Image 1: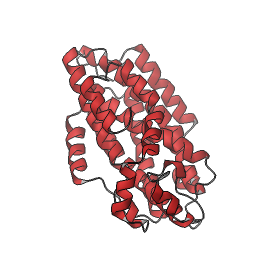
Image 2: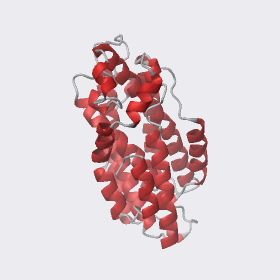
Image 3: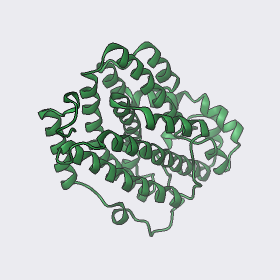
Image 4: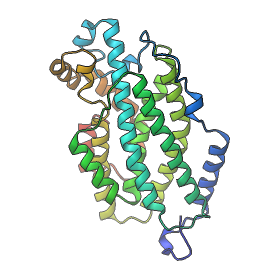
Length: 304
């Protein structure tokens, strides 16, 4: 993605341009309008879960076994809304990083046009997530103030592989859980539709993020690679630990302190996160981004 006046190292090669063209073609062929594709009119049916119960942070705990079926369903609805709200937060960070990356570059470049297409997708997704969370009967969940400020700093200074690999981590983690939710008939139908739309369109975003991460790393020296490996790991930790807001338990009518204690010790959920991120960790390892300091953050977030 480069203009004629850009430095030579920023110019996209034939392979990168070919990837962007194929993604543009895919977007033109298979994209959705959530305003018309999602059933926003039918009232929320509380006989359904908001997410696959196995993905609940309390699934498998003593507390989960004591909960009524209605409480379990309400908890998964609150958790799904929290994940959606976290998704909006990170998509706003993503959009700013991508816009900054293509600023003043060649608009005729397919990579430039794909970047704008991705931003347009993310705008629609954010609106879709917002409406979905509202329909689930949840409040506006926001990350902790520290996470918000770290995100503010990250979107301002992150560049190259640090930006694109962090984008990939957030998208991959959401993708795995949403693939389960969209196929699960226990999940309320409109949420399944939202998840299907996001999975289909994010698959293109993940392809681009992987390609950009490899391309930027090809020009990175040892020091930059090691520094960015830690930056990506910290960003991943903040994103993953912000997905389920601590207020979901109280809003689901549960004992907040007990729920937090049992969720924090839930080995089932930790194991599920690790297994779902196996492919992502394999990619990061192949890219040389699983350094010893970075591994500490991934382990703490139960991603490896």
